[in-house]
Amino acid sequence: MGVLARAREKLRALDVLPSPNIWHWPETYEVENRAQDVGDEIWRVLGELCDWSGRDVVDVGCGDGFHLLRFAATARQVTGVEPHEPLVPRARERVAGLSNVDVRVGSAQRLPLPDGSCDLVHARTAYFFGPSCQPGLREADRVLRPGGALAIVDLDATVRPYGDWLRADLPTYHPAEIDTFFERAGFACRRVCATWRFTDRASLEAVLRIEFSARVAARAVAEVSGLSFPVGYRILVRRKPPGLIVR
Image (cartoon, rainbow, N blue to C red; front, side):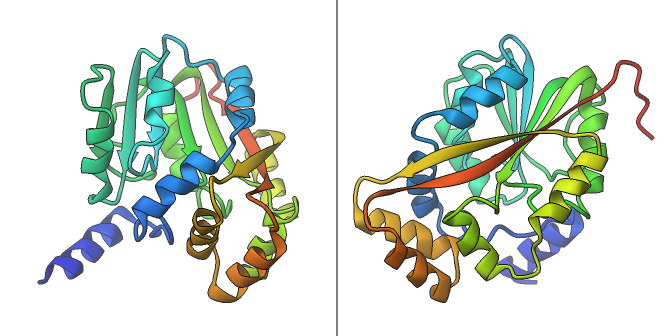
């Protein structure tokens, strides 16, 4: 069995949906991460809803570890979990020298952590499609301590212009149905409008081309005249009740 075949076999075993962007273009995705939320609106609201200072945090689908440093600045312990093995060494290199950060291979459905071992499970653009993510939600409940929180940060496809581009590529994606799913699953929702700002047009266009099909990316490039645009997010939070038993 070749290297590619073995990698696919591992992903099937983990029941992982491949990422369409960072798995293929990690350097461009780094540019995207640095451009996102330049005003720290997401971090501000996330901190209001889920204070992780002095607590144990798990970042699910941590990629190459971009967000780990932010959590590590005040958290007691941070564990990044990433299913795509080529990204794990990149994440470990990013956090090298930090004694309170660990990066492990694993999936949302099979977190490599014991029961009741953390206070916050953070997942950014990892539960985008709502229905079918129940195994990941149950696994988050398993590793959370009573009173701990699962925080899901996802794109809000109702906010223009990014939401229009997203729905153009995903015509079967219906934001209202996703909202209903998470509401019924016990999540509270806060909507945030962040700004993506780039240093130059080449960077902006490269990021749009890894996020959308060629047709929609061309439309997006044409519709953005400068170096920034607004992007809507939903911050979904569910707390594990004290005494909850996960089966």
